Structure formats: C-alpha cells, structure tokens
Amino acid sequence: MNILVINAGSSSLKFQLYAMNNEAVLAKGRVERIGMDSAILTYEPSNGSEVREVQEILDHTAAIRKVLDMILHSDYGVLKSLSEIQAVGHRVVHGGESFTGSVVVDDAVKREIRQLFDLAPLHNPAHMLGIVAVEANMPEVPQAVVFDTAFHQTMPPVAYLYPIPMVLYKKHKIRRYGFHGTSHMYVSERAAAYLGKPLAELKLITCHIGNGCSCTAVLHGRSVDTSMGMTPLEGLMMGTRSGDIDPAIVPYAMAKEELTLGEVNSMLNKHSGLLAISGLSSDMREILEASEAGDRNAQLAFEMYEYRLRKYIGAYAAAMNGVDAIVFTAGVGENSAALRAAVCRNLTYLGLELNEEANVRRESADRAITTPESRVQVLVIPTNEELMIARETHKLILQQNDVV
Ligand code: AMP
Image (cartoon, rainbow, N blue to C red; front, side, top):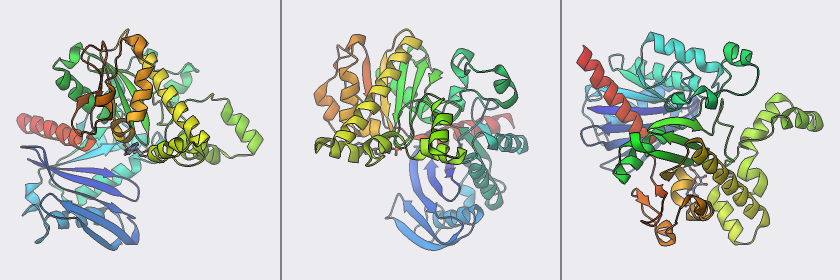
C-alpha cells in the first residue's frame, strides 16, 4: 500500500509518499507561497535529484494537483497511476477532546474539526483546506487524520485542568491539551524497542526540543502529563516562545507598554524565548556559536533554556514516581550534545551517568548516551512524525477494509 502524507499550512504544504511494505519514502517535497503567482514547488523523488519549479499555484487544490502531477510525471514520477495511492494521511494539530486517536475522514469528522477552528485558528483551518483539496483531486481515496493532541488525551484531570473557575472548562473547553503527540508517541515506541522492554512497563520522559519544545511524562505507554497546554505556548522556553510565565504579566505589560491583545500575543509567541534573551537568534546553532565566542546574552539564553527543561524533567520524574529513560528528539534534542550534557550533568541525583564520548558522537541511529551502569538511560532518537502518520493511516485503512 502507498500512502501520501500531507501537512498543510495556510500558505504551504509538505508531503511524503510512503511505500508501506518497507516504509520507504518514494518521494517528498513541499509547496510554498500557495495563493501567489510565484509559488515554489520542490519535489524530491527517491530515485532522482530535487526538482524546483516556480509557478502560479492559487489554492490548495491546485497545489495538490501539482504534487500529484509530479508523482506521476513521465521523467521524475515514481508511480504510473493515481490508483497506486491507496490512502492519504493528514497531520491535524488540534483534536480537542473529541479525538483520542487517529480517525478516517468522513462528514462527521470534518464537522468536528471545523468546530475546533477556534482552538487552533492558525492550524486547523489550513489542515481542512488540505483535506478538501485531496477530496477534490482524488475523490475515491480514503483519508485519515492524525492529531498532535490525541496522544495526550490520556492525561488525567489532575494534569489537564487549570486551577481556574470550572465554568471556563465547561463552557469553553479551556484546559491543557498538549501538542507534538505524534512525535512523543513515535519516540516512546522506539525507546521501548531500543531498551528491549514492553512500553507498558516503562516510565519515560520524552523531550521534543526543536523550534517548538515540549516534554512529556509517558507512564506505561500513556501520556500522563505534558508541558504544552491549551496552546503550544505553555511549558518550556522555546526558540521564539516564552513558555511558562506569570499570567499576570500579560495585563501588566499591556498597560505599561500600551500593547493590544494581538501585540502581546505576538510578543509571547514570536519575540520571546531564545530570541528575546540572546537578542540575537531563535536558532540554537547561532546561540551556541555566540556563546562560545563569549556572548554573555547568548550564554544566558542557553542556561535558561537548559534550566527550564531540567526543571520539567525533575517534575515529571516526580509525577511518575521515577523514570527509566529520558529521550531527546527533534532539531536541538537530536543535534545539540551541549544541551544534553548540560541537562544530564545535573541529573546525577537520579543515578544518571552520562557517557560523554557517546554523547558527542554524531550518529543518525537511535542510541544511548549513558553508561551501561546508569540507573536512568538517556536516549537520542530521531523523530519521524510523517512515518507515524503513514503508519496510523495504514492501520486505519487495513481495519476499515477488514470491516467492509
Ligand atoms: P525542528 O523544529 O525540530 O526542525 O528543530 C529546528 C531547530 O533545531 C533549529 O532552530 C536549530 O536551533 C536546531 N538545530 C538544528 N541543528 C542543530 C545543531 N547541529 N546543533 C544545535 N541545534 C540545532
């Protein structure tokens, strides 16, 4: 079975085509600047080099059509006919409380995703454009949706409720949802396989540290707490997001700086985190370079970022009454030995013993960076949300075919 995975944004769209018999990527790419006459289509087949075209692509339906044209192209194509794509899987950021797992798209699912537009106004409407665009181009092909929030729907009320008036939860669904669930689920499964133990017997803390950052307590395979909340702003310090702050700062800063709601929202989401403290960049590579060159603000940004992550790891060890393994993933987690070392050097109270040499070794495979004697293992596991979406879609389509 071949599955096309789509991650649709408001003006861009990423795709990967998987052959599920061996989970190989047959082709991948993206369309940027959708809606413009100078949209950019980048397409990379597994059996050839990257193709880049600039052309008019006015909406998501046209963007999907271009992607399919490439996949079937006489020179660069990897399939002969559209019928060789048996299903499409979409990333959807917010599944609210309605979706506790991935589902096959039908009218009721689409209605429910639309109901959730308010909770994720920047993401869910764009994902819906992707779903409708696939429907327009491939009306017979089943589609599935995989939610970033679904993995965290196992959180108990003690973790997902905010201590504010219950009417806000009951009327407006204001609660903690958590994000990056597909990534946390994927690396949890990989960690169990690496450790050679059933996931159901493990206490894991998974740290997805990229542009966005979140940390999850995975108890026996289920998310029991996670650092992002009602929106992806809560929790860890990130590239441009503040993470946890005193909520009273919002009205205070608004009054003092005469900020509008939109401005304060933009300040906390786009002008905070590493960028704000370093005054330099949201990119960890640049922060590390500047730190080494002696830039004090960059050093402070790194120290705060690491400190806040370490505090969450401590909190989640407490939440689960122990931890067997800590997993680092995503851009910074997979690549920054400096961050991992700084975190691990201060977790010796857990019986954690870093293997400094393994930590700095550059490898793309799943690996441990602790000594064999270490009571808590620390693993570096490259995340692969697209593959997880393909697997979830594959599973759902097989189940559906069984039922029919
Ligand atoms: P992601 O959101 O997972 O794509 O992660 C993106 C972030 O990973 C970038 O903003 C960088 O800060 C970070 N990153 C990528 N490569 C490295 C590296 N070699 N060392 C440190 N950070 C890195």
